[in-house]
Length: 348
Image (cartoon, rainbow, N blue to C red; front, side, top):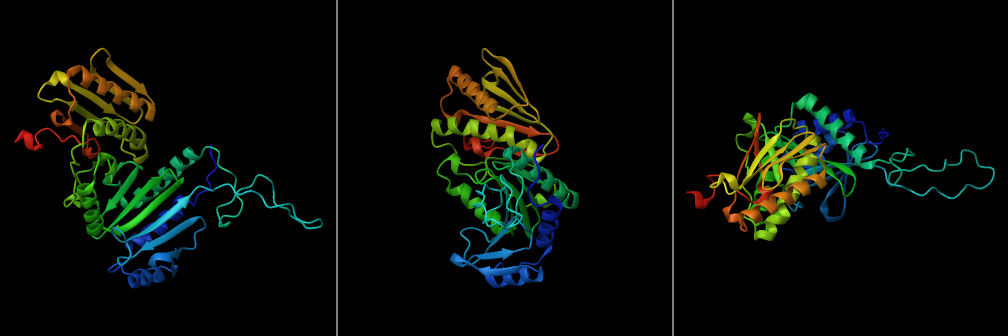
C-alpha cells in the first residue's frame, strides 16, 4: 500500500468546512483579507493582485482570486500536492551529527520535512481524493453534483459552492470555494463560447434530484464542429466516465443509447458501472463486456461504436440523438455534442 503523505483528510475537511461556512462578502480583496483574518490565516498580496493565504497546514497551498482580479469567477483555491523529488544535499562536513538520510524527499520548499517517496503516485492520489470526499460527505451529505473530467464533486448552495477535483498533470487535489451565481454564470459562458467539444468546462455530470439543484444550469453543449470533432469527443467522454465515476462515488450504472434513434436498429447501447463496461447492439460483435475497465477499454468501445456508425452509414452528428439515464439521479453528457431525443431543433 502507498504511504499517505498528503495532509490528513479530516484536517483538510475541517479547513474547507470552516471556509465554506464563513461570510466572504463581495469577494473583493478587502473582503477576502478580512475573512481570512477571522479564520486565523495570514494573507499577503502577490503578483497580479492575487492573494497568498497561509492556513498553517503543511503541504496545503492556498490562493485567493478576488473579484477585481479574477479572470472568471472570484474564488479561494486550495491545492494539496503529492511530494516531489528533491535531490539530497551534499554530505555535511566531518564532525557534524545527524546527516540527512539518503533517499528522502520533500515538498518544494521543505514544508513537510522529509517524507517517504510515493512510488504509486496515481493510486495515492486516488486514495487521497476518496478520503477527502468521504470526510466532506460525512458532514455535508453526498455531493449532489459530480462529473468529469478531473473527477469533480460539488456541494452547492445558493450562496457558495465547494468543488473538489483532481489535477493529474500536477499530481494534486484542488479544492475551490466560489460564489455560486458568479461561478455558474462563468461556466455558462464557457459552454456558449466553446469552439469545439474539447473546450467545454466539463464533459459529463450526474446529479441527484435535490432541492438545492432547483436553479442548476445543465447544458446540452454545442453541436460538434464536424464529424472529426465528434470522433475525438466520444472516446474522451467514455474514458472519463469509466475512470472518474468510481472516484466520484456514483455507484449506479449510467446507461446510454446513442445513434439514429429514429431507427432503433441503428443505435449502440453502453452501460458504464463501477467495475464493468458493456457495449451492445454493435454489428458483428454482439455484446462486449470489460471487467475492471480502464481508459483503454473505453477507447476500444468508442472505436467499436464508430465502426458501427460507419456500417450504418451515419457520418454526421446531426442524425444522432441520445437517451441517457441512471438510477436515483440525472445524467448529462454535453461532451459528446449529441442532444437527448426530442430536444434538438430538428425534432420539433
